[in-house]
Structure formats: structure tokens, C-alpha cells
Length: 428
Image 1: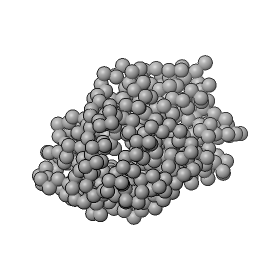
Image 2: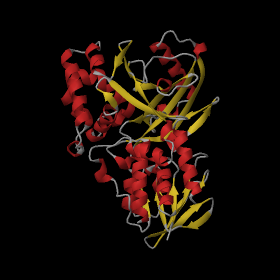
Image 3: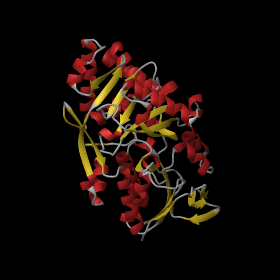
Image 4: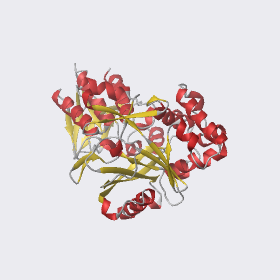
């Protein structure tokens, strides 16, 4: 007989949990604080354009994501595009992302180019991440590519993504990011990335409709305030001052929130969840009359820019205007995170005009900034060893967030894969 199961969070992982539960004959009730589904993949109205608040793209290797598209009958809405990458360095925008671009790259010796290319190639071919699990990423890359390539091509990406945490990251985690992009190629010379007609919203709404059609329930603007635990077992969920009984609870909210919602967990578990560090993001999205460049992705190494790069999304998904995302990553405790939105909007205007001097103020049609406090877990060496298993020692309780598919980086496909597996495990 089907079980009533509470799901906390309606991001891609929470939706995937509920999606699997309804297909297996259970009744999930999803609690979500936001007024929409999707978490970091949610869309907003950008002066007439429905688009994600934070950029998303899909790789050829995103099997779990592609499988759900198939099951929902929307696989025909997926398109693959040969995209270009660029590198802004020494005040010039250079081609990037393939062997020819690497050979022609100005500002790097031939030896450094060779070592960088070999490391990227071997990382893409590698499958076994376990030996890298307890290795520190910066040292691992430095030993492979040498000081010169590290300084020019890697150091600023680390510094402007992770700040104080950049010297204690897991090599396995960084490797998985190199591999994901490296494997999304139709050849050594062509990168292929994907987009959905209508963006992530197309998938999110199809999943939502499927869940509701099969008897699942979504409660938006209804955060779970407490998971009720008695006698070592889950009893129910409190939301809006009401307690409702459930057979089981599956939480997909960011780990730093867990202690607040589950104060009755054993102290060692509360400490493990609370100790997890996260990077915050202020992501600026700009709508322009003309393109900044022909690249989808531009890495930046410029002493005047405090960003690791930018994403020209309209060079992947065709849109009426040109759309660029510029993410500013930083620890949430960093004073910069308290800066006014306008500070970030002004920086983006300045940076884009520097990269493409043909841009004028009149080319900027609209700009917005979105903030997410728990955008990216900090995965230090041996990360998984210090995470409690998703099935907690409280009967009927599962807890996970995007940290749990380490060493994979956070992504919609990984969230779907992990969420479906967790649903099967929890309902068994």
C-alpha cells in the first residue's frame, strides 16, 4: 500500500523525489518556501522573458535528465549546439576550449600549454575519482600543469569562486567539473551543450504536472518549520502552525537549514550538518541589444574584474535579445555579499564594456541581480567521509542536498539521479 511521504524543498532534487514516489504508488506532499518550483533552476519574468535566475546548461553526459525528458514525452524540445569558449586575458579576448585555441593562446609558453592540455585530456579520460578524494585540488593542478599555467589559467578561477576556501578543496570535486565539460564534445575540436525550448521551466512544469496528476501535492509558500521526531522516529511535519502526520520525511533543503527544522536530531548529526560551508552567489543577468562576443562561456583573468567568468546564454539558446549572466561568488560572510545590488550591476556594465568596447550604455536594455546564500557547497578533501548517510538513524527520515552527489558538481541531472534513487530507497 502507498505511503504518505513529506518532501522538503521543490528544487530539482525534491521534484525528482516526488516524481519517483508517485510513479511507485506513494503520495508525496512537497513543502516549498518559495512561490515557485525549481530552487536555483527556477525562472522569473525578466521584463517579458521567462528565464532562469541562475544559468543552466546541459551536457551530453546528463543521462538522468535526458531519461526524464523521454519519460515525460518532451525529449523533442532538447537541442544540441556547438558552442564556443573564450578567455579574457591581458586585455584581449582569445578563443579557448580546444587544442588549436590552446596552441594559439597568447601569454603562455609552449611547455605550459602542453602541460595544461595533457592534464585536461587525462582528466577527461579518467573514471576513478577515489585516489583524488583526499588530495587538495590546487596542489594537484599545480603539480600537473606547472606554476605558469596555474597562474594564468587556474588561480583566479579558484580565488574568485572560493576565496578563503580555495586552498582546501577536493581534487576529486574539481576533476569531475573538468570531466563533465570535457565529455560534452562531439569531437576534440567541438564542444556540444544543450538547451530546452523554454529553458529549465519546461522540465520543472512537466514534472510538477506529472506529480499532481498522479496524486502528489505541492504546497508553495509553505516552508516546513519543524520535523516532528518522537521516540527515535518521524511523526510528521509542522508548517503554518499545523502539524500533519507522515509515514516518512525526505528533506532536500540546503544542509545549513537542517538544524533549524530538525532541532531534535542527535547532537552529532546537528553538528555535522551545521559544519558544512557554502559559497553564496550574486548573479547578475543583463539583457542587451547586441552580443558581447560569440562565446557561450568566457573565463576571465583580469586584475580589474572580481569574477571567474561570464556566460553569454543567448549564444546557446536563441533569444530575441542577447542575455548574459555574470556570477559573483563569495562566502556569505564576506562583506561584499552585503553590497547593494547596484554595486554589482555597475561592475557588470563596466566589465562587459571593457570586453567589448563597442557596447554603449544604450545597449543595456535591462539588468537584475539575484542572490542565493547556499549556492555551492565547499567540498574539502575527504568530503563524503564527514557527511552522514542520507538515511538517518531516526526511523523514516532521509536528508540530502546537492552536496551528496560529490564528487559531481551541482546540476539538474545529478539532482534528478540522486533524488530518484533516494525516493526508491526511502519507500522500500
